[in-house]
Image 1 (cartoon, helix red, strand yellow):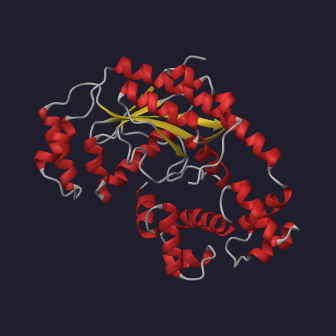
Image 2 (cartoon, rainbow, N blue to C red):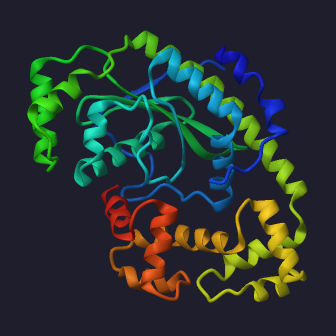
Image 3 (spheres, rainbow, N blue to C red):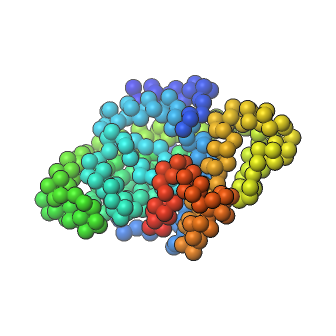
Length: 339
């Protein structure tokens, strides 16, 4: 069933709409790793276009069908994440590990998980990468590309390859509690011991299936990108160009319409048809993405970031940021600086 679903990529690509919202082997890496990038470097930020494209892939019937088939067959979670997505990969997934759910409730332990998940993505250079987190669970990532550029990752894991021992359970629970998680020893131990145990050979076979699927998603991404490039009206392309170049300034619909040589009414209509977003929502999303980059710098106060990205008040910035990013600027900064 999985391979049948993957084989429909070409047909499904033609009908994708924007939702509102060579044999290789797996690489094992210890948690005491070094990033392939220079020390202190951050992974390159995904462009807005790449994130929108990945959002379309995640909303597609192809991905949803495959995700359902994969999780049902393996019992593993499966997520599709952008290159610099600062949300936990399997949050709200019905197959999320119960112990990982407890970890995600605490800011300090959550930041550690985000760091590990970002590292496993950085390590997936051409082959699936598998890392073991500080709690002893394994997580894997496989690249999804647009041409030769990585736009996202398929991620799965949160498993053991061997049954846990009593000492491992005690160590993991103690570590979680020391990080400030308000959880009882009994609850945490039960969650940890319920972690799925999969023989390594079986797990590698599941990753091999995800390699095939990642190639299908990459093919679909290229098809969608070509279709959109041909379909996007030039006025909308000019409007988006103006928004990205002037996002730090006060932008009005009239200003953008004049630059695009189109009436404001027609621009609103075509903009929604082309991008799937209302004009104001698109502007806010561009500004929030730029704000995330500025939040990496601890020398920028949040109020400064708000005004540098075009928001006219701190309260408006906080509301928009939380609505679009799903968390406050302060929380986002803490996670970014912990990685």
